[in-house]
Amino acid sequence: MVAYGLGGAVTTAWAQQPKPIRIGVDISHRTNPFWVNLQNAAEQAGRDLGIEVRVMDHERRIDKEIDVVQGFIAAKMDGLVVGPEESAVGPRILKMAQDANIPIAIIDRWPGVPPSGNYITFMSADDVMAGYDIAMSLIRAGCKRMVAVNGPRGASNHEDRAKGRNKALAENPDVKLVAEEWGPSVRAVAADKVESFLTAYPGPGFDCVWNCNDDTAVGSWKILSDRGLLGKVKVAGMDLLPEAIELIKKGTYEFSAGGHYLMGAFSVVVMHDFLHGIKPTEPIIKLKMLGITKENVLKYEEQFVKNPPPINWRERSRVYNPQAKAYFEISLK
Image (cartoon, rainbow, N blue to C red):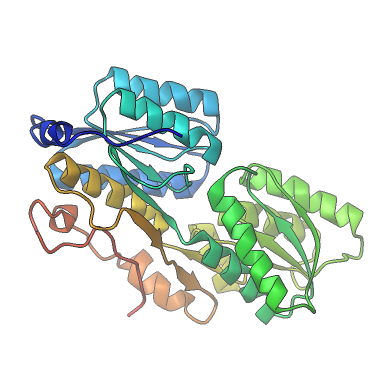
């Protein structure tokens, strides 16, 4: 068992760090627009707060993630925000930060232990609920024979989304999970998996594809579109990618959900405040996401795409606004 607690004197030292504060943010990869949105949110928070936010991606490779974190430590960053590629690497990353006396926030994927000491917060989507909502959108659309494109095994967010899907299936015993596959959560991989499903279950022998995110769902959608099967097979995902929103508007995509990319900014604000001596009020945060269907997609587009609400992240900091909350969840007016 690794102990993450550090003494109060160290916290005081962090609080006295000279300006500008520098925070290193490690993300999985930039091939999925979700991570690009998260990066942009983190960098905008840094600009609003007048601090340096340096974002690196580890290209979905654990070995490169270790190198990225080591690089941040060598550069003497004041704080770290890290999204572990797999839950199993979390304790190693936490130990690296502890040994270097650098506070760390973990995002997106549970590292196996709750926050304590210099591990100041964990933030993610409510992934169980997200997986459940994706499945229920398909079931409400008439799905009876489901196939599933999961993300990588060992990543807590994808494991939890699958748990949520299985909960929905347990509540609807007339709906069968015909097959599921695990792997990288990118569209090219999803396209290959749907091709394999179509070969294994001709006809097709399924009427919906549950996807772990929008990137995989768009890959699934493309194959079904090419085969002329969109009327027979429903598709859903999550992350509110622009492509998914357009497909929902066209009526060929059942559901997406999102808003959790903002944890890039939330985590930077929390780290900024911690470095000023203000501890998080909620060490573990699981964000509920906004679900979008054909019924509310135009309202979402008007409010968040055409007229995105401005966010001043300085106002979200308890250094400047003691009553501020560390996070918020987007909703439709």
